[in-house]
Length: 236
Image 1 (tube, one colour):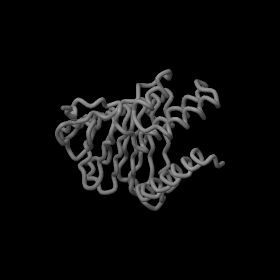
Image 2 (cartoon, helix red, strand yellow; image 1 turned 90 degrees about the horizontal axis):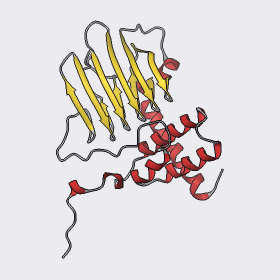
Image 3 (cartoon, one colour; image 1 turned 45 degrees about the horizontal axis):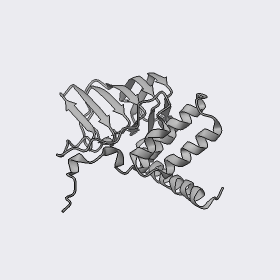
Image 4 (cartoon, one colour; image 1 turned 30 degrees about the vertical axis):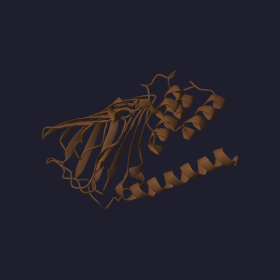
């Protein structure tokens, strides 16, 4: 008689990947190509494999010869974790400061969450989504995020009146994009500034207006579907 293996003994590399996992690998590959590490034909071949990957075992070989951390599957936790994230997220808050570590699945802060004055955010092969729309900000009009990103991404969603200074972030094969600047209303005074410092290694930091968050996500889903149709049916 055979018995199924316990869930805790599963090989995490055989876990199914999400759209976000595929997008993360594609971002790494495109950055590598921009740095001259991949030829155009290599980039096209690897992007196609990334978009068709079903498990982490299929994604891992696509970046193993690049100077980034390996694509890590999420840590399958036995119990639940705090409201800040899912499996693979380790959260330690102490009021004025917080230390968040992300490995695999997304970490999210949204709704009426209390913003620590200083956040140490380590992202290894995962994503961190911080939505400040309804957040409770610390007094003094300023807070800091110190990032260490390896093949992952950080997304900040800002309501009017909150600005980000990310000039202190050092990139080593990563990128910082502040899309919120396109929608700044000069009539709304800035009451809080988030200073982002730290380093990126094949990762990204994206800053955008909160009201555009849902629209951006819908557009990304449409883009994914179009890309799959092109790959599956040979369209241009």
